[in-house]
Length: 389
Ligand code: CMC
Image (cartoon, rainbow, N blue to C red):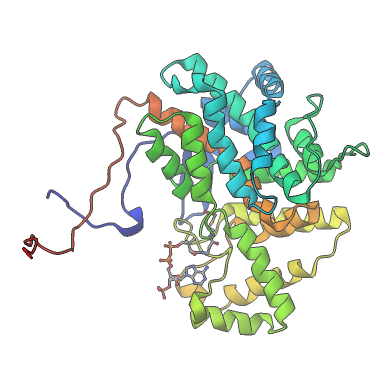
């Protein structure tokens, strides 16, 4: 059938060229548009990184100001979209709420179907960057049974988001600059990671010429799984289970090594990083700093550190090149900021949005793009005859 190789998990398949992100998994290198992640995390802002990923170059001060301004102007959700949240159960997982509402954006902005019109693509880009944090915060508020706030466009991207999550109608919300800075940095660290499962999903859906909102809502669903973005939520559940069970970290590690009930050390291992995940290093620094700044002592952070130490010294993990990944310490930080566990993957989605948008736009601008259509190796029955009864 012309099939040349069987490739479970697309370990050896490159369906595209890309100029967006460079990863060297052996050396632990991650660069967005050529800039090392460490330099971006230290000096940039999430919106600047979003601009860089989407447009290919860092913005000038004026370009950044105008990008920021356009995003602020588009934060409001249509009132009918606000009421759309009422149709969903209050205990829905916020990731499901997020993907449903992003999918619904296509119904409110039907001009987004004009994917070959650059102005429309730019408008859909701005709308999505502006509205996803608001949708995310409403998913959170809904789970609490609290009233939705309207965005306050005098606030920065991250501060607006924090207020929408933690502010109430009853009292003014005070921004904590430590939280704001740390969240901005975490969003930068998540902003792109080349052909991971959710980005590949965005590209595959986009390759059918589906619009940006449809493609990104598919990406959100791909991110939801515990082996991908859902790992940050799964890490915290794992740490809490270790704490509550009283079984001890060493015993838990033994269960992982014996593959009892398929239990894995969540937040460990990566398809491409076989040395260390450079993002994990930066996140770990943040975890210590943020918790110290907020005056939070979380025993789960102690368990995480003990778990990391035991695993890094253990042959099982050494031989398989399993190291902490970006998700290992993020949950502890999000928890200290006050986010419930079920919001963690939603925060990942907000961070990854510029990457998804950049890939969707790169795909559509590339004349070599073809509809994605993998092959298979058929191992079923040969032809047989329908029985005559
Ligand atoms: N705990 C215990 N064993 C593991 C783990 C883990 N976290 N990860 C991989 N292994 C073992 C696996 O059992 C296999 O062992 P064996 O050779 O004896 O069968 C070996 O290591 C290779 O694993 P694999 O599943 O073939 O590796 P992969 O490249 O397909 O999977 C991964 C990568 C990230 C899905 C996997 O490491 C994993 O499940 N990690 C836990 C979930 C997680 O933290 N995901 C977040 C990834 S980073 C951010 C993101 O993408 O969201």
